[in-house]
Length: 474
Image (cartoon, rainbow, N blue to C red; front, side, top):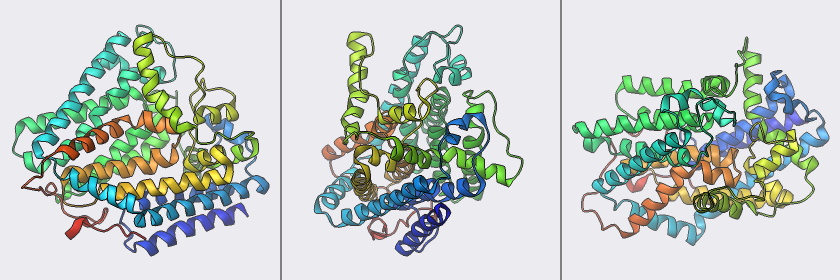
């Protein structure tokens, strides 16, 4: 029965999306979210129930969950279906809500008022803050950048490293602002293609972003960065550059999930699949935590969190760093985030890291099935709002930010949905976007609206036609 339901989820996602927009390679916020949902609640459960899980020791906790019992797997998959339907309902209703459409449309129009010079200033400012933050992090660690990259995996798992001082990761998180600076600079490519200074700054920004991502030793954000760059490059007319984009995309999607922890120094070795079956089970192990966490949560949850994780995320993201600055020590006795609670429930400790919580499991933690409906519905509203803010028009910078946000919401926003993680790990994109929106509301109207960089409307994202391109609203 579990296999049948997994197939049903695959069919629901595929047919509903192809009915909404028949173009296969079209991607907007809902299509990207649907692809992620298809992987974690359709394809992955199908592989788990047919081929099993990998035998590697790092997946030990997955084998402790009795996923073969239909009395636990079937309810989980049914709840997943309810969650996906709720996302689509939120998306469709959001299209007709005046508040959603009016506010998003107004902000979208205001964003187009930002001049090239102001975008350039924003990018330079973000880059400056990122560089200073990186230097401060290096000073706090009392180690050079190369040493911090070399031992990034050990530091990420809170191991002591000789010659490297103990320090929080706060400044390193601030240093990720350079990632958004890189996206903005890519959006300005056409207008500065003859400027040597621009290309020096762009390459420096890319190098700084990659350095910070390697020091963080996190696979997801490194993969997302590669995916965004690959999609941007794929929009270029040059067949050589498009080949580079394809190579980057395939590389980060295949290599990072399988060997990323080893390459980043988090794990001492990596599992080398010997055949297709082993490759599929290994990928299922990497993407199986949402489904297996949901099964465990349904069986073990004793009390609901009642949507307390959003204010908790603000406390962790804003309050804790400020407390550190003024008190010199982190605050104690804060409630555990939902991802930590999930981790403790599964393996009894958070000493080895966290097992993330996806959108459906987060909703169940909030208020059971009703919580899933509410959480998924508001996610659908949010991505519909963002679809109208970052429209696929001819504005180069807004287009690159649209790509970045689509990838972020389909991965971090859906698969790693603990609000504490979303706010903390999404600081590099959330904070600059908030600042840009505030500035856009004050910016004068531009008499020379600019078009996209020297790219053509490719088949991967919506057409940049008249009126900003459609999104296949329903």
